[in-house]
Length: 160
Image (cartoon, rainbow, N blue to C red; front, side):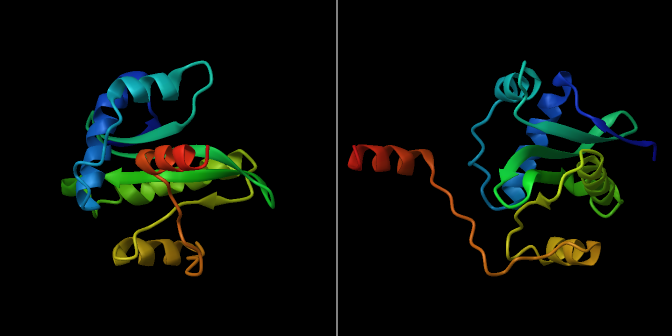
């Protein structure tokens, strides 16, 4: 297996979107993805890219990806958020996920960052165990809070 972990290129975004959709299906939300290849290309490769993607290429085919972006912590300064790390189902267990994870952590270290953070579903015990073995802290006393587009609209209209 000839494997390369590399920075994604604009022309990789179609494969990246396929992986995003595969992850959504794995997370039991197959219809939740509304982003497009065009959005990924525009937001990731413009004058001020909003994210960075690493891809795992096996024998010339993209089989996994990790998407990261910077955040700012009032306590730590600039940090890195790992939004998604996914490997195609048929390639799971081959070490690709670990290789992508390692690349993300090495990237954060090279950037001089004080923290890398991400979320994991509470039912994904395999991932939780992997992250714990890697030395990551699993914060069980914090909740992820989100407001979707409908909630944003209702809040703005209600609090005008």
